[in-house]
Image (tube, rainbow, N blue to C red; front, side):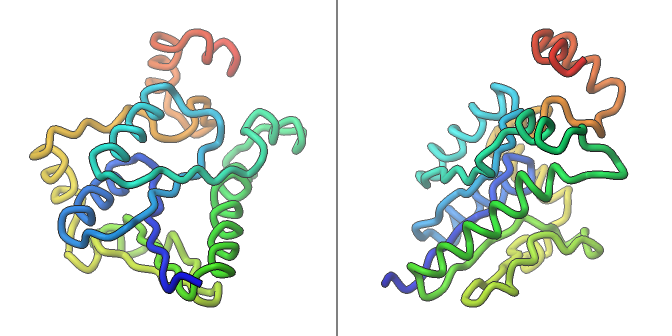
Length: 193
């Protein structure tokens, strides 16, 4: 049984992108970039994910809920909303938790790196250390990095983050984001409508 597995929770957003790139520079090891797509991401997100995988030389591990957002909407007989935000839990959190638990069956220890910044004291995302043999690390908090540090790091490396790194049809979008979806991805917008 391999001793350790090191995984970076990778959404493709600015924080997880900076985390993956920085860890590859200062703590090189055989990381897996683990993402939990909902099946509703835009093409630029997919290109970004492949690009970061190529830049770091680390493989991209897709962890799926077994159903896309559209399939889950059909199953739940409702779209997610502020009062029923089941989408993140069912499509991202629960599949990642199950995947981590599965990895502990074949590794003595799994270390999960999460891109929470030092200026996000109130956020407790990525709390999976209740799973035996899973250790959580928050390197950006260890480094004292805030949002400015993340943007500066990405700018120095000419890394551009896609406009949307979550669902194209997210219920929580602002009007301007819906307008951009309508303008740039009319077929996706029409389906959302």
